Amino acid sequence: MRKIQTQGVHHITINGANRQTALDFWEGVLGMPFVFEQPNLDNAGESHLYFDPGDGRLITVFTNDAREPQRKSAPREPGIVHHLAFSLSQATFAQTIERLDERGIEHSGVKDRGFMDSIYFEDPLGLLVELASYRFEPPVGHTHTDVLLEAHKLRVTRGDPNIDRVHLADAIELLVIRSQASLSDDRSPKDPYR
Image (cartoon, rainbow, N blue to C red; front, side, top):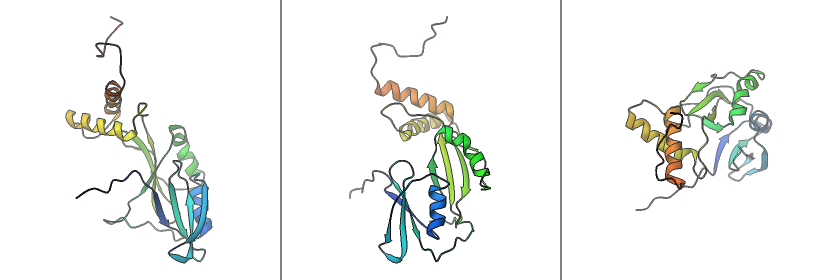
């Protein structure tokens, strides 16, 4: 028996309402370029809109102009997608509350997640959306998940309840020590100010 190894999210498809609602939200609020459109090849009554969320992957939306948006919270039972999370820079994240407020979009306010900050709100159809911003940048040659894996190991070893900034900083230091060579024989912390 062998695994089917994934290499990233290819795309996520949402059941939308009409075309304009999809365009207004995905591009007009979240800034995702509308990159192409074609018929839904499994349902000729629907159009299939494709948006780039910022990493070259795709968010797609099935639309039908006969469907009007129904404002209600999407179900959150087991087996149902709870929310979609999108990455923001710290600069954009700092402006997010103001930009949601100017549209009158209700939101959670900033939620401290230890390793990132989050803001939650619903799209026009009730899908829960999270806008998240990491509190760190991984060292060159590493990913955010590399740092989080190391931070998790440190958190567990220390008996802490969740990953926080100290775990991130220590994880980044460990990754740099392991992955970047140095001419020094001793790379331990020093105090040159004594």
